[in-house]
Image (cartoon, rainbow, N blue to C red; front, side):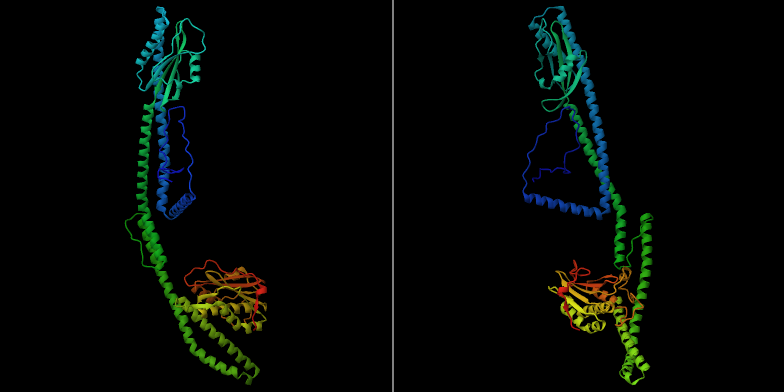
Length: 576
């Protein structure tokens, strides 16, 4: 497409519409359709789509642009309506004034012509040659009496369809008289109306608007004739065009001025708001010392003072909470470390008693067994508390290395096999195939699998447990599915809370601390992964761990559904 071609709807189109004083429409020249190559169409479509996308985004994010754009559009609409009304009013007034002027001159011309014909033919007899000369004299007299600018011709024609007369006046017209503009309707109306001047708007051969004035003449002994005067209204059209151009230029200047003023005003108002937004973002990012400059005493200054006061209060509260959290974390860490020494002593003493429990009475032997079990649980609890305190303190570092997750799953299943056998559950691994290696901290992923498997064994009601491993281009997923008691929606919402148990009255056989799933969730988050859960009462529960193949590459979608579809024919049994 060349620079000179404007597509339909292009904003650089024609100016304000001009009013044509002609009653007939200007001829329209049809342009042939242009052949466009497919490459041109694709490029144009891409160009406009990109432009519209950027414009929509800029419209959403920029309050200043929206305000200025809306103001300019509404101002343009108002100026266009006012300009169109003024243009139409001026055009109507120009046409009305010219119409009155033409009517007055046509009446005077008809009176002059009628007087000349009547006076000349009633006093003496004339032959055809003298009558024709009289017609020319009348035409010149009428022409000299016309004072209106823009006159283009005068003509005297015999009215058609009348009976023969003693004398005959040859039709006469000025040299440049446009006879084609005299329509049959106008001629018939003039012939049927005596004593009146009829007007008709026409389009002259040069394309300019014009007016035709027609009236009836009575020539003694020669019959009825029609007097036509044609006026060129180009001067009025030029005046109207100049007025419209002036209105258009003035409207553009006014809209530009309104847009500039709106931009300045909005900038003065939006600038502090933008500064407040940037300051709030820095506050949210952790820069608690940032503040909004306070200038003046207007509403913007009041907003700045209120914002700064709020920021001071938030800083104080956040500082207090941070200090309290730090003290709590330090307390948990210190207590955990301090408890290790006496716990080690108690564990050694308990192990001695537990090893010699067969020498004790039954009641004492049972106490030794309970002491041994609770000391082990206490050690696990201390380890979990220390791990949680590291997460809270942000002191966790991952030891990443490429790891085959199928092998990791098989090792975890082997480690939990004996416990599953005791509970009557069969462990199955489903690995459809694919590349399952990912950059992970193997120790932490193994801990997640132990927690998930232990939870499934605990609540699986002795039914089979299926571990599914699958992958896609960006992620690897591991799903642990049991068919046990399941959970309600409210219980699923709390399953990762610390020390929460779905059924506190249920007897634990594995000796969990209530922190396993919370730690598993933290481990997954540290890997930029996700740990999701699905459960239905009396149907079962499924935990799905999704990990990225490489650290820093976002997960687009998980390779496994939740819960994954059962693949009973592909289940691989694990001998306990």
